[in-house]
Amino acid sequence: DIHVVTGCIKSWLRNGMPPKNEPLWPYHMYDDLIKASQMKDYTTRMIAFQDLVHALPPKNFTALNFLFEHLFKVSTFSDQNKMTISNLAIIFGPTLLK
Image (cartoon, rainbow, N blue to C red):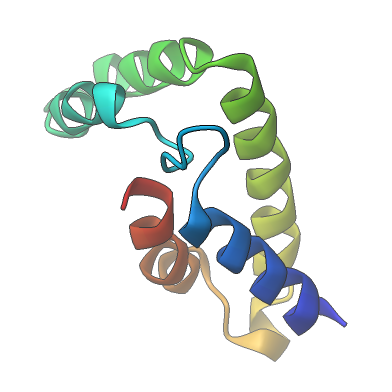
């Protein structure tokens, strides 16, 4: 059941990544993420995001990759489940960044 899987993922993200129980996006990288999101030029912004993602600790990078693959699959059924990329961002954004 996709609802059970998504609920488990959201719960795991809410509790944080061991051993420090930090969010998937670590606290020390939060300011850099915000700066990147405020860049005006699309290409520059995407390069900054890509650089930040590749600078994540390996376990965070792997978890983020699996999560985004899952959320992409969920979004492909948005006609049936109403989970568009925008809706998924509203639901999962706060749990990723705390």
